[in-house]
Amino acid sequence: ANIMHITTPGINEKGETVGINSKRIVISQDVEYITELIPMGREWGDYQIFDVVTTSNVQAETIKDFFPYVETKVVHPSISPCFRAPIDQKDLTIAICVRDESKIDQIIKPFQWKCPQYKWVSYKHLKGLSQELFAEEMRKCAMLIWDDDTTDWGYTPLEAIKSDTIVIAKIPEKVSDWMIDESGKELVKGVVWCDTISEMHKMIGSVVDAWVTDSIPEDVLTSMEEIKQKYTREQFKEEVGTVWGGYVESYKTELEKLIEDIKNKREEIKAPEQEEK
Image 1 (tube, helix red, strand yellow):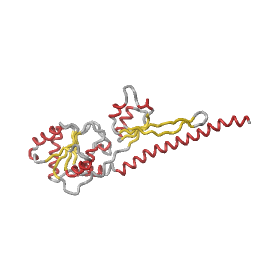
Image 2 (cartoon, helix red, strand yellow):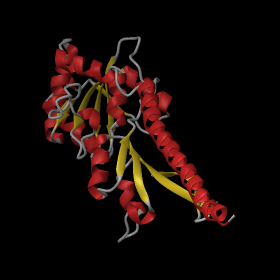
Image 3 (tube, one colour):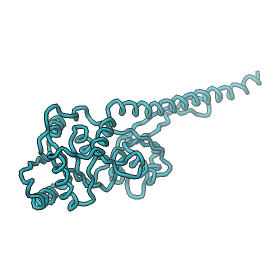
Image 4 (cartoon, helix red, strand yellow):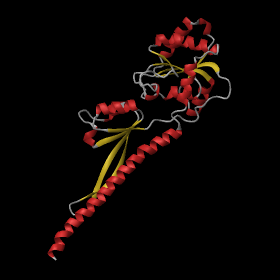
């Protein structure tokens, strides 16, 4: 987490500006780091932190659960324009992105045993690549297998969807904003979700079947198109403008009040002096 300070001068009983008053705004992208950074027995209020900007409504709710007195605002991340639909036909290659690399064998080998007709399908473990190379590989691959229980957002499946790549994913422990449909009750259909690794074996076979026969369900494709329209640079800039514009307006209001307080205090000081004259 980063901390931004918005400062205004303080005033004394004579209406003179002294010192500074500082509003501390935490910019938090991962709530896990909050527990790592704050010492045992302390909380944000002890450090005069009452404002937080985070990256999802889910994280905002978690932060409010930790510190009910904190005001939260959300700026959703954007996905780089380098993740885009390919011009050429995709290969039937399955990209793999997993947090725990030991799960690769647990996913792929049982799938090949259960679906021996697809042993010829190739796989790529996309790790340690630059963003440009990662995007290039994603445009080539027909599918992505994704498993990351610790994620607070889930950039990789979004990047895959932006690249017209079918995503087969194990449901993470923290379900982020984009993973929920507009009803707020169901997972989006633009991802093939699995509850367990064992269930994933069957799902991979079903998706490969559908890809080979050009019969990917329409609701999956429609949902992918809807997701592709979101999390753009333009949306990000708009949300940043709204959030920081709100802080600027708040700062202006506080500054105007400060000026008025200075004016009133000085008039109070002058009043007795004029009476004596």
